Structure formats: structure tokens, C-alpha cells
Length: 441
Image 1 (cartoon, rainbow, N blue to C red):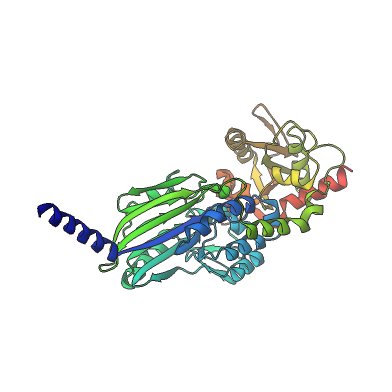
Image 2 (image 1 turned 90 degrees about the vertical axis):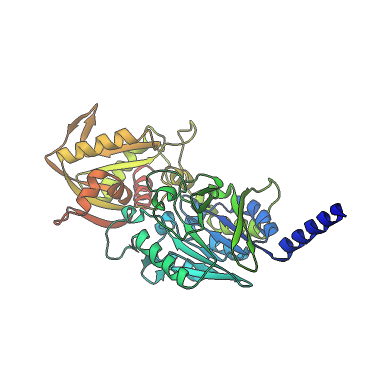
């Protein structure tokens, strides 16, 4: 009798758990960077997971040639095919021209989040609430927390609000709206660096789940105090799947579990694969177009050529140039796709006047960090050899917009009361193409 009673009690408790248990599944990607090939593999797993909420944490474009050439159209089309609910732009999505970013936000059939950014007619929605029965999930979107430092202070440029001010306001609003679970979709690394989510959120309450991005690290999921954090891999290497178990009477979340989904080689989603092939086809002639018939784009020659190109485009006394180290041993990087590998991001040109001391400090900084970031450096209009600089007391240089915002020396000049810099708007890669096409044929 005792054994039967125990069995009956066990069955009763089991049925009670089953009858009063709800499940909510969240899937997310991040840092896809235009990689439709890997997304076609992941898509099989995403469809099989059948999540209640499908999200992307930013950097859909940037660093991928077809994605840049079509202005991100194919990436948004892929998200629409998979029925993504929300996305938030990452720092490289702001490399697109404003009109392209605004159009991609309109093209997306889900909701573009991000209460911390606006750019012309484009702006992110601060928060959204998703329901499953009586269970209410609030989603807040933020772009990269340090993003204002990545852009020139231009009247026509994107405008960014401080992430913490926006986040606290949205958490307060969701608390008043009585959501049962709060997600922060953030283009920010979970663990890496002084700006990581773990460090920045130490004194902020009210977040239940952070979905990270930006640092390209994978984080399968763990608790950091009361916050659960997860980060999908970059370039479509993995997607995050988070499962919430909640009591459908009290609506309290009782368990959070997560895993990383990975595509299986050879098992592609036919819709995404067809989109990928069709998206690349129109650009084949351009991708394989020769831009350098004589000379080459090797690590030995390219820095000098790039610096000469920037100096000519900016019509200045000198120029500083930086590019990726070429892959492989070939000295015949001549097509547009080769140039893109050396210069994978869409930066524009600035002119800036510096003193000899500032130029020396700038060169020392670039030389120090070049190996760390796998860069090659070139210059034109002055002499720099073994730490010895020969240049006039003041010199006007042409540099990339990225160098203007990333160099400590040049960043100080950006915010001086009497400006010594000017934004030309010329795309750096186009300036190099023009020089190579006219000078080296």
C-alpha cells in the first residue's frame, strides 16, 4: 500500500509539473557579416528548433564583398525568409551609406531595435513585447556601447545616445508594463574587454537574458549573478538557442537552458542557398575586374601605392595608409576581390594638419599596433626610417576616417575648438582604385 501511495504521489507531482509548465524558445545569430553560405547551413537547424522568437544581434554586413555591393539587400531577404522577429544594427552596419541602411530597415519584415541610435529617417525601436499565452517577454535592443567613438562628429552622421541612459529608461518602462522576462539584444561582447556586458551590467538590475555579439567569441551560456548570458559565434559558425521553462500559473521562469546550434556540412536550406547564388551573380564582372595591370598589390608594394593614392585624392602634402596583410605568398593581387581583402571596410577620407611631434607620435603608435592587428602601413610625402622623422614643422595629411577615430593622436584633434581636419567624403577604396587604374596600366 505504501509503495502504491508513493507511486501515485509521484505520478500526481509529475502531471502537475507537466500541466502547469510552459516553454518559450529563443534563437539568435550575430556577426554574420554577409555570410549567406554558413547561414544556409544554420537555417536548417533554426527551422527545426522552431523558436518562439528569432533574433539577430548585428553586423549583418561589413567585411563581405557581395553584402557591401548589394547594400545588404540579400542579408535582409534571408532574415525575412527565415521570419526573424527582431534585429539590431551592429557597428559595421553603420558602414553602409545612410540611404542603404534606412532602406534595409524598411525592407525588414520584423522590427529593427535600438533606442540608442538614429540616422536621418532611420531609427531603432527601443523595446518590444512578445506574448505566448499570458507569458510576456520584453526585448530591448542596443547597438555597440562604444560606437560613438567609431564615427566622425559630422552633422549628417548617425546620432548615438549613451547606452546606459537608454537601457535604464527601457527597463523602467518594461517593469511598468509587467513583463515576466526581459531580454537585452546587445551588439556587445559578453566577456571580452573593459566594455564587456559582464562588466558594464554589474550595477544594473532587471535584465534576465543578454544575447551578445561584436567580439566574435562563442559563449554557450552561463549565469552572471541574476543575468543569463549567451553569445552566438561569428560568420554563421553557430546560433544560440535558449529555452525558458516557466510555470504557466505563476508565470515565473523556473529554468533557463541554452546550447549552440551548428550547421551540418552539406545540409543547406534550399531557400537561403538559392538566394545566395542569385545575390552574387550580378556582381561577378565587378568582383573579378582587374584594377592593377602593372605592378602588384603585395605586402611589399601595396602600402606605398595606397599612400600615394590617398595623397593624390586628398591633394595634400602627405598621406598615411593602413591595410590588411595580404594572405598567401602571391605577389599578383590584381582583381577587385583582392583589393577588397586588403581593404574590407567602407571607410572615407579626411585631411588633417599635424605638427611634426604629433606625426611622430602617430607613426610610433601605428608601428606599435600594426603586428597586433595584422596591418601593413604606408606613408607618402615625408621620410620615416628607424624612428627618425624628416618632415616640415606642420604637414597636412590624407588619412582614412577609421584612422581619424581610432588613433589617440588624431582623436584629440577631432574635438578641438578650431578644427584642423576636413572630411572629404571620398571612399578610400575608390581612391585607391582610381590611382591603380590610371597610374599602373
